[in-house]
Image (tube, rainbow, N blue to C red):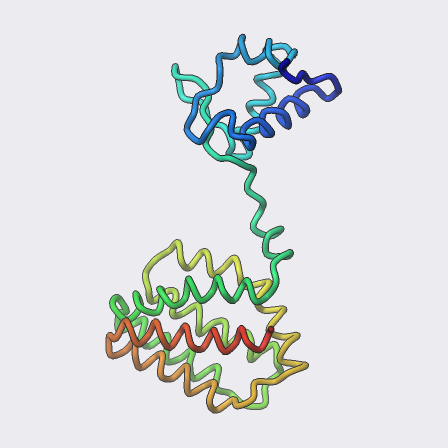
Length: 223
């Protein structure tokens, strides 16, 4: 017997039940849902209630309507807001994501950087070398350097992904450096110099490895 919706608000209940059936695999990704009349009868709700439930799930990216074709499954679950995901994530997880993004970005930067990109990178490198500045200012200078590498890759998607990490990462870095300063500021800065040199000399493999090694060392400090 098909489970029916019995409580109010009906549209929200209907949306929850539809989502549960999608998660259970009743309708796979890309599959068309039954017609409106059939589905409303299965759920024991009116067609207007069903339409409202479909609109709710469409707004969350789970369902999509195609003119004259019906309603299709476009995702198997509701995607959480990035801010929620990042607030819950450990800083190590955020750095792992940075490794995936920035190592590739460093390789692309070595292939695509322009003379203007290189000038920006070298200015950012000089700015992060300043000694005796407050921790927050140093972190901001470091973040500006790493973002300059992303920009030099000329991939807007990678840059936007990095930007989503910045608020979470900035606060974590400030907290960590106040408690546990970098063992060797000179060695840390030298790693950034080598990265810029690899990008300047158009060495994608070396740039990617230097970025990965630096961020892996950073991750170890948080674990």
